[in-house]
Length: 373
Image (cartoon, rainbow, N blue to C red; front, side):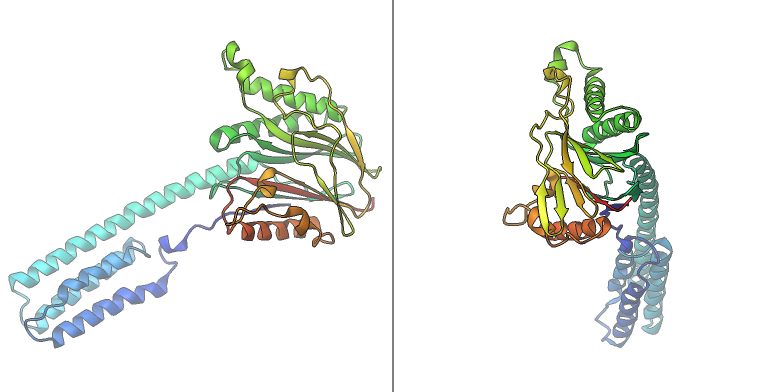
């Protein structure tokens, strides 16, 4: 399961979503018409009718806007008839102005609605592409229950520099990757896609976790530097912090390789245990540059009922209005009995409340609970 925070598209820009608001220009037309007819001859409120189509543009489409414009023109003509001034130049000028304004407002609606439709199509294509890159995690893998959370810093984005992926191996284990690519924007998305592709291609067929780490580092470093001049290969600053896990089905342990990433947290009953590796390797993309040919694997107990939380620094470095970091460890002790999905839902709500709904960096988390085989 994957939880993603996605802002809703404001419905007020879409025709037919706010029918109650149509009462406002209607009341304006009726009020202006009645007051103008009942007012002394030297008082003319007809010009205020131009506000009716102008207001309608804010919440309706071209049809309703044109209808309000037509009603405003009719009301102006009615005022002219009732006051006996319909054939005067002043009333005819006001009617002509209303017609022009109504046409302009309806045209604006047509252009805006077409632009919205284009944006919707682009958004749907982007969502499809991003869902392919950051595929949902499986809810079950052997004895494991898994859930993922992704919170983009940029509105309406579904993929940034944070990433996660899972794969099953032939020797009955589940491998997980959680990473954070340096930077943001399109460059970070490109590198995240690269790392995800390399993991999916090799995670199920590399015999050991260290060999998988070497493969990811080599693939990442090669792809990010293949088009650079040779003189710039050693100055390439593209890298990704990452945590690699291998969780056997029939052995209550978790094998871990940390590449410059925050340590996973193990929740057992009401206790919180950081799985801090004795050796934290350089981020993915730097290993080959420094001649690292092997990665050390740390093994930790992971028993039935334990819950493991992986997270990126976007979670622990999120700050509130006073600059206080999000207290992840403190919060987790309150949710130790939750399922992975519920825990991440609590985390999402609490984290967004802590930052008042605005993250400065992408945040991702993966929760894994071991059940009985």
